[in-house]
Length: 256
Length: 314
Image (cartoon, rainbow over all chains, first blue to last red; front, side, top):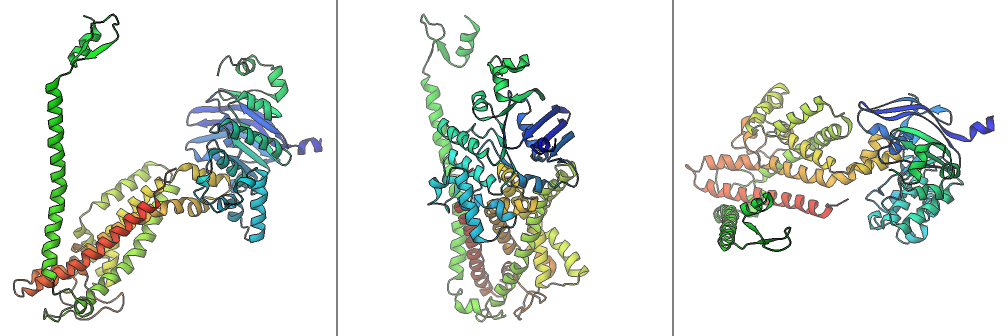
């Protein structure tokens, strides 16, 4: 029992969310496990991005958002008053749809997190820099120009830089909101490979529009529709033998 | 005739008589084209004349001033104290007065102005109250400077008993340009793309950390441009200082912020008043104007250089 419980990173219980008067998430119940890739699929406007942004409370930057229900992160409710968003977001990294490096050097970008969290030792910073960039499969491409502006990198490189930046604070979970939607197929393949290799150390939750991508990289898949979690289970099961008719319609391309 | 070709006819376009009814042929109306070309030519000349007008005014102004100041603007003029004798008079004390004003105005407007802008843009929730503040600040920016002078006289001169010291003058000028600094800083902060803030928040950074490390570095060129332009306005401002009661002839060079002072625009004003009795004062005024203009041009150029050098697109 204990062993089973410690495998759960996120336990979402009865989560509802409203933008003003519009309900965007309806009674979501889902568990996200350690060292697994959880794909979140569904048509546009179904609440996938809203859901993933709720997991690190980034959604609270949107005005007039209200939530009810619980999200337990290692057993602690993230909406609890004692939970600091800064701490939560340090443990839960995020990669956005559009690469969003800072207009600073590659070096400064990767070390932004460690620096604001108080790492001063130069040797340690260099070490974090190298391991993060290596984990993000970017080291070989940028090691000779670490002090160049990040805006000089290609889109795919920028996105891997953002992943390296997220990794630099050694998070526990990485949330990815359609991380490859702005990238070409080659860059996409690189990121997918990367996600697969990151699974060993991190729990990853990824929103994607591409069913093929969900099928290729995820262990579990959650299908959202109109703010509801229609189906959640092993990716293989969902794609080969969906229980719900709506899931089947969506993955076979009948709508969405 | 169907509706479609009626509409086309109204616009001077006739349907081509062909088998294909969707294809139209444009009938060339030479008169219309000629008229449009003519209008374009005329307007081009009007626009050029407008530009020329501004340039002409500026060059007449510069010519008159420079012509009058020749022979008067020399090293002696810049390094001597004021005097009632035109040949002896210099503006050393006046320059010190203006510099003293800047010593007060720059930190006060930058600290208060940027802080206000940061609060309004980054911290304040988007409410009706905040909108009210914003509208009021914009309104303040258009209040005539004499009125700020009266406020400064009442608040700093009388109530805080600072008299007509550099501190009182500097604080009054700060009040005058503060709204402009706030508005331009707000614009600079607004121009920082939101995804940069999100990137920082997602790393577990707090609000202030995000502002200091991400937002301000991107916004600072814009903030500085606005600040320099408003400070150069403060240097050239006369009315509020006149209201404060700056002495017409101050022989002492100010040594502290609490001393009485006189500044470049004020000195120009007083010398011009007295040209009837002492015609040479006109030359002194002209020489002072040259000094003031050079200072202003330099400051504006710095603002432009900063703006051009740091313009970025995301």
